[in-house]
Length: 406
Image 1 (cartoon, rainbow, N blue to C red):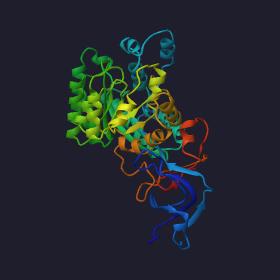
Image 2: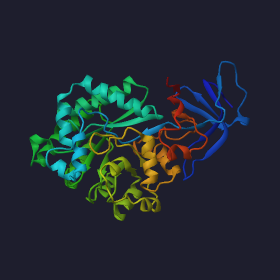
Image 3: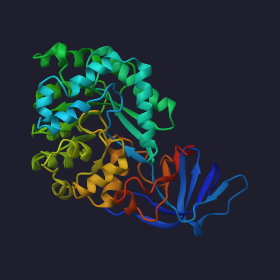
Image 4: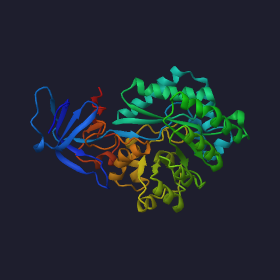
């Protein structure tokens, strides 16, 4: 066996590879060899070849190792807060009531437009650090609180800077079709013109967007309007994702699958036809229990249907100021189990292998030779602990692209 290029070997590890299948693929007394940013070898300690001098060996004393966690749906960059809306909902107002009265997303848009990049960056980095403290090594960050050319690009630049400033990989998503801005009230089609003619082309030309998202819902954009956005994304070679079937069934999941979408997210009102289309297209179902909990929703996403049709299930925090102020992917795992009925193994796959698939990142999400060496070493003896507990079983060590985070 060629050990050339090996830089570090972790031994005596209990490894949850999170490979294909429903189980963890748990392997005890393992060794993981790193070569630069990649995993070079994985196997039983007893099969580890003789190592030449210069390769560092570190024993983990049986500690659990998983892939670095991936939060595949966040709205991390914004200004202001919406605590007043929480109080209004406690008095009986619905999410739709607040949005139609000019609150909701648009209240965050107003605050975000007024904030400069440095202010937004400082807040976003603090939020990213909170996720990173739980073993997160990859974060998706959406725009969507600018809703005009200059401010949408501003949010994407800030998201890029988070990844440049911190040891975390950032996947940026253009969500200009998040809501109709106040200056386009009653003229949603005219705003979509702006998105497809100016905002999306500018984001693509600047290399600021890794994917494109939209909100397909009665309070947001119609399927016909989303198709225009997705057709434009396709022309620029950008993959698409969709907020779909959160508050009603607009058949957005089937629409997204028709474009080969990486993911359809929320899905509380998903029907069998939509799930079948997702299965055929390989579109990942991203479930967001934080929003379900915070908005007191009662309609559960059809987990049994997704399982039966073999649709990959991911979990994410959906961190945002209005409907899911949840800066904990670990708590999202627990909620996915308690509220949605996922198994702990499904929850871990949902924040590793399937979350990577939801971002189109085939180079991570599992522990196997050739993958990016994003690893979390846990103060835990079994993977079930990661979903069964929150605020406990913290990562002892985290490696991102082969380098230990300090």
